[in-house]
Each structure stands twice: as C-alpha cells, then as structure tokens.
Image 1 (cartoon, rainbow, N blue to C red):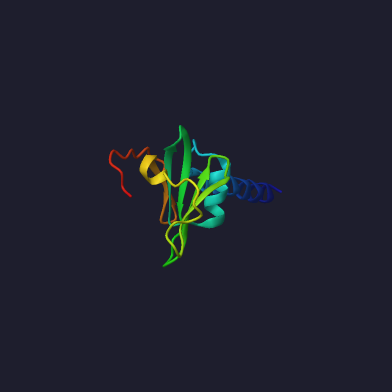
Image 2 (image 1 turned 120 degrees about the vertical axis):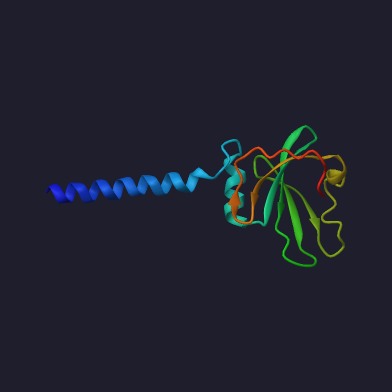
Length: 124
C-alpha cells in the first residue's frame, strides 16, 4: 500500500513538472491566440510590433522563394500576407513595413524568448 502511494505521488509530481516546463518558456503577456498559432504553424520567428496603435505579430514562415509571411492581430486574426510570387502579398496593410515599430522578438528557431528585447533600429 505504501509503495502504491509513493508511485502515485511520483507520477503526479512528474506530471506537474512536465506541465510547468511546457509553459515555462512562453511569454506571459502574449495572448493565448498567438501562442496557439505559434504552436500550430511552427514559424521561423515571430516579432511583436506596434502598428496603428495596436500590438500585432509578424510570423516569418518563409521557407523558400514565393513563400508568404503573415501579420496577425492579438486575437489571432490574419490581417495581411506579405511576399508571394509578386512580392506584394495580398495587398493589405501595405504601409506596415514603413510605419510599424518593432517591439521585440517573442519566438525564434523553435524557442520562446521571454526577455523584453527592445529594438531601437528597424531590422527589416
């Protein structure tokens, strides 16, 4: 009986540790919608921007010529696509790269970046 209790306790603790480790790297101030999109799309990187007074997220999913990158709202709604065969994307948010202010990179190369890495110059 005592051994069974120890085994159950060990399994419960390891389950809690696994759950907390999975959530440990995710930034606490990013919406669940964006976190879910990152996990579903597995982009190369995700940058947080201030665009038209709102936080938006640029997903770099580029893997070769004619691929697209995507801009999402905090709610996970796609706002625009950039790139593609013509390089002009879908024609929405055409002033994004001229007017948006990059705040930080939140995800890169399969890793969440929790620190507030501020960017002073544009890195487009």
